[in-house]
Image (cartoon, rainbow, N blue to C red; front, side, top):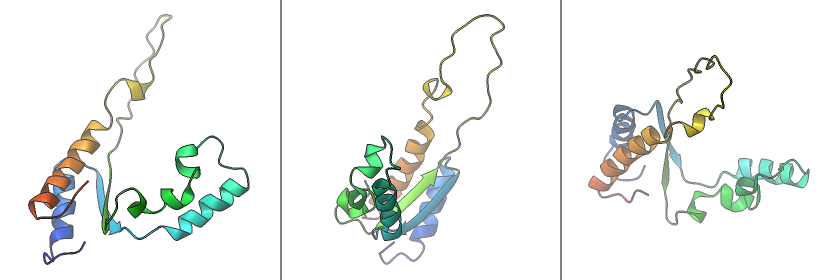
Length: 127
């Protein structure tokens, strides 16, 4: 990450993990050219199915500056889903998909918000 603070990366990682994220990392916002080539090859081979978000425009999907102009670095994070499977209800019943039973992205959003606040407090743009 650019800037005079040599410890900025470490502080970003610490802010994310302190806010509950399981994994936090940083990388350059340079286009992912190797990934772009894989996506273009898979699309040309008919292997994209209905995944329009990624395959409609591989050049845009693999270039962070196409969606966030002027970006220099990326902060990436992961948060585990709860993995416990509820027991069967014991009678005939409908089940709701686990992803629909809770806001599994809430912890991820909260952790990334903590990172964004740290970056903004240091004068960086964070979106």
